[in-house]
Length: 447
Image (cartoon, rainbow, N blue to C red; front, side, top):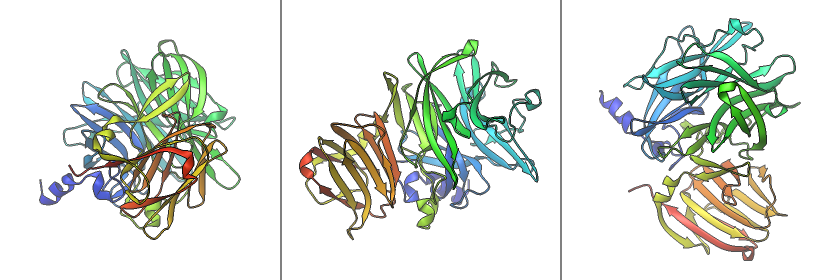
């Protein structure tokens, strides 16, 4: 290995300048996560990747490793397009006797022709995906499938069978649907059933992901909603009763995952403790990324991993426990500056407002609790909570370029990208008397 390659191996997500503990790359562009798997005593994370610039051009699939989902290293291009393949789009991972298997979208686009299909490969010891780009599904057998919109396969294994949940759309009524195929051998997939078309899937559904909590299944999805001026990108979930062996499903509940523009293409994974975890692209197609606005080399972030549970059909999200090991000290906040690598624990019983300001007293972020609803604002972009709350308990996760808020013990989340561009910020609080408890937990990543 050359010295240049050794130096590359030593880089971590912290070298990007935009993260202390969120996943990102030291340099380049990332968007959708393409799978996270605990295998051979470490986590392997896959993602849409352009290693050369902070724009979405010539997308490959990247891979990196982590022991704790806080620090990531060994960033590599696992799979790049070939001469015959114009793009490698989102997918997911599983394991088999070959090791780690990647299922992905093969995208071909020529003048007046576009086709998306599903291919597979497996990860070798040098972190490269070996594949011949052979298609797993013969689309000639399914003339009703929209081959221009057939992407983002999520691989789910139950008992001795593999299931592919694939994003698609109904060509006749222009609504998204999820098409399910199954196989016992990771090839020769056959059609099983469809979920949809559904109004909640919008004009095109994307990035389905499936997991199980107790007896219920969770289907996460992102979707495109077309308006007069532009396309909007949103994310939701279904709680399902499913009998995969007999191709049956029933929808029990529909909801939103994160009421924010900065949340798209979530992936589900099993932690090393066999909990159901979630990561998501912490950006959106709906505005120019803050990294490009600030001419940064690294562009794109993933949410901090969340652990999922259900409470009477409501999806509950809580931060992965490893972050608690990085707490250096905790104290009651009175005034002054705090680190942008902090957790904030807050209890309130009435309205208040917090401005997060830098050393020049410039407001970087605003949190407002008003008329029983929570509002999050940056640069004139406002998100608001879905539910109303008489009493409010917040866990606010700050990092160098992000804020994630867990409301009332994970009943709801609000996430926002915000480039603080400073190591410390101050909290200017209006109606402080309505906040009964405000604790700062400083995080330390240097030990």
